[in-house]
Length: 599
Image (cartoon, rainbow, N blue to C red):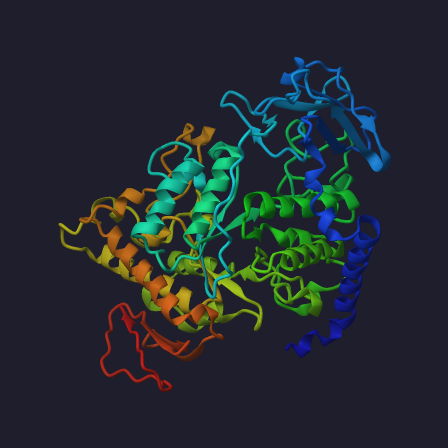
């Protein structure tokens, strides 16, 4: 498919040999990857059938470990772990005299090393934080009647349309929203009357106990599955917090343990720790983490955050990727990390046929989204991260009459053939403080006073609404094999996104989604909402995201016209700020459907 990769054949073969070697070692040492990646069943805290409890940790540099918590009055020495082989530690606690577990459901625990070092188990399944504390607590989650999933996972969709969601801001109210709110309000919107009915195929979430209990998250996923919606998790295996008391950092008292020691174990820009993917126990921990989310919560796949940092020893810092293939091979590539990603994708796609994995990579690494057996990394999709940056650049720097049609088309089509991309006009990144949503770039303060249908539409709102629609449809039709929207942006959510912090007096004003704006018929938000709904429903009908790349027949700089065909549908866009055209000729095949979206 790409003869320009031929000079790097040895690199691909070496990567694949390293991958096969890891699989062989797993077979020899662990009887295969299945049990190895289910280590969450033995590490951490587990109640046995007789109500005894087994605690297991990996802490190779520790000289002694103790368990303390509510169950023993926080006694420092009463429950020592026993040292095992290969840096592992175990503790068995028999049931009480009444045969009940010695550690009750919802009680707090800590692993203690030495006199003053208190740690949370890396395998803890639930951690919480009270508002007055900066440190998370390990909570033993063992409900007497755990949530049982009722609905099967949906099949992998033909066209992937993602609603990127932040559960904590999924409410118009100025507070941390909950899993239950998302289940009963946001999902209810999808079921009843949203742009997503019959069209939305997936949510992208990340998880935290601030939103509720594990069972409430399981219910959210189960309800989504009942509606035919898949749920993806934003997973961060590229780096970890430097926190010690409630993080992985220095868990056994050493600088390494889960991370590389010294400078290699620290990210120069993120102030965070970097995993040692060559470590057997780190592989066990990370791969088991993926299996745990899939098995216990029944997620349908993952977006892997920040993998550019993983793929290269330079982590992408101070490096501009020009597209020259030499940038993706050689000593700058971290093959330990690369092989870990190959292993993760191989295992997930082997065990779960319909699992979806998405890579967040800015470098453009070739074969990232080709199957592992081809020497690729095995991801299903990568995020087309240049597209939203291009739209923001255009709105910031160019007048309407200076928009470059060729440059826009190039940005939307500049992707590797045979490697699927998720296109998007904006995500959460573009809306964060310091930037703002596309709608606010287009209409700014006019949105505060001129979005009412009860007053005449002024030129700024008129232009903004039309360009908002056109930018999103052009991105949807031309930009990739999947589409992503950040929650609220489908109806032109105003302003920007900012979380409570000292700098804004802990305000929730910008940490919420004003879904109520759509319900007000006299505001024009409902018009943007209706367009987005119909756009997704039309894609559901014709399936252009699942079709081969578009053929662009027109990109006329003077007329500001773009025309292309995809999935037997003709798209025509007129971006000219003043000119309209009649009897405009474009080359087409033989089609029964013609869609015109003209400004």
